[in-house]
Structure formats: structure tokens, C-alpha cells
Image (cartoon, rainbow, N blue to C red; front, side, top):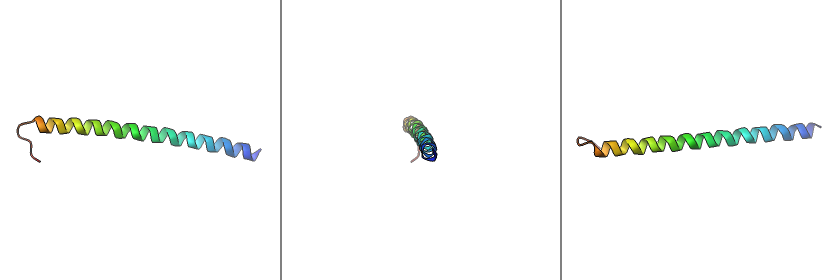
Length: 50
């Protein structure tokens, strides 16, 4: 019985881990997109400084 409970907890943990990783990758994609948009704005502005 304990073994079954351990299995359940483990699957819940791995599910939460997968959700967390998915959320992190989504956030990373969004921040990358925002960064590239900001870079484009910076490049297109006439008085940009590098």
C-alpha cells in the first residue's frame, strides 16, 4: 500500500515539474520575443547608441 502511495506522490511531483518547466520555457520565449522587439525598436530609432 505504501508503495502505491509513493508512486502517486511521485507522479504528482513529476506532473508539477513538467508544468513548471513548461511555464518557464513559455516565460523564456515571451521574454526573448520582447527582447527582440525592443532590439528592433532600438535599431530603427535614429539616435540609437550601442
